[in-house]
Image 1 (cartoon, rainbow, N blue to C red):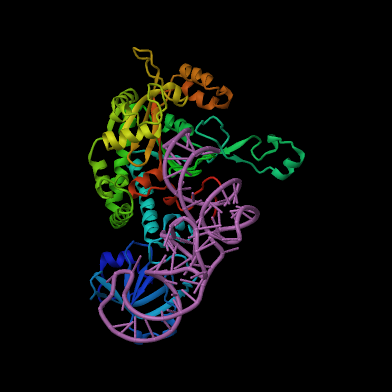
Image 2: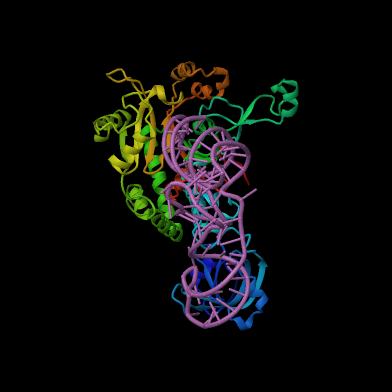
Length: 477
RNA sequence: UCCUCAGUAGCUCAGCUGGUUAGAGCACAUGACUGUUAAUCAUGGGGUCCCUGGUUCGAGCCCAGGCUGGGGAGCCA
């Protein structure tokens, strides 16, 4: 029976015989093997007495070799660790040719490791990131479950083309080569008898459920066929979408803020070692950057600050005023114009979050013209400005991490909106019907799971927080 | 898709104004040492200078086109 290293550190059963199985990180001084089994970022030191093992076995101990080591667990004589394994039996489970194995016990660039995504789990950084990813996924479920939400599985293949959240991937089992020859497409012959796509959002379906179950959330993969090439976008990503009957936009903000804070707290409570490592990693990375690009405070301090402080809440109109009155604006440092009605650019959001407030900001009340059809219309204000009950939660370094709204529950208003947005009624008749049969105020949001992981781990490229990133022109592995 | 930067040993990178045989650290091999913490020390092997074409007596360096990657923008989570 093998013992997991994380348990050995927790329980420290000194004097007992244990077996560990894992991968060699380093073999120091022909005497000390540093072994990782992935259960924790920490490695166990396996101590080898040369006389007790044959030379040909020891020769095979290389970075990456998979071994099983049995021996007595003892207090360590060395400085770097409390306990170590005095090895009496050593077995090679899998050799690792050092001339071919690309992962070495030294700093690799993230770009290089991205091309070795099948092996990058073996590194400290990615081990830490994916352990944190697990705990955050768990935290999401715990947060909603503890509050009486039901986990809803919205469909991944959708027949709806009205979700309006971006370009979609077509799902078909038609013979495309044949179609290319004949030039004829008969969608009625397709698997579902109509055109179908991968979902870009589970929101509309979640709304249907919320108007019966009360509180639901989805947590699943989402697909967008946008030609996006940035450090914040993926073609396949995971999203959490709570939807709550009887909530208004203010309840919605409270929920989003509480959810983010819970996840951060949960990660700090359950991933201490990994986050400390990631914090050190970030500090070392920052040393090579110009001063103005470095983090103003260490990772854990940043997370604590977010957990312990209220998010700033401002309206879109107030946000525009702040931008207009900023020195940044007066010195004409914004590339894009600022005026009421614009869809705020990244540089504007970054200024508000990273320069002006330096903490998470919730912006509400966006102009109706720049937001989706399903967002609830506010009363037209004195100056005749039409806004919707939308909210975006922006965090430093990442930008939008949550986007949501109170939904338009009034049938007539929603129908009118569909017309304005050119959404044929017969495409979303089912969505409209919920407003006909016992409608109620409700609200929800979408939270980008990978963006949450970026925020918690300090990783700056979204491709480094998902095991196998899918981006334009890249679906390797 | 647009703007911008980069591509030199397995990895990280240096390479002067276009000039002899392209370098360093790490990794690897061999040896030494043995309570090490990415161990250390010595010696050694290792190159399609991204690709194609061009300019030139001569190109890693200059020019054109392409490929790949990074950063930024748009789209958004």
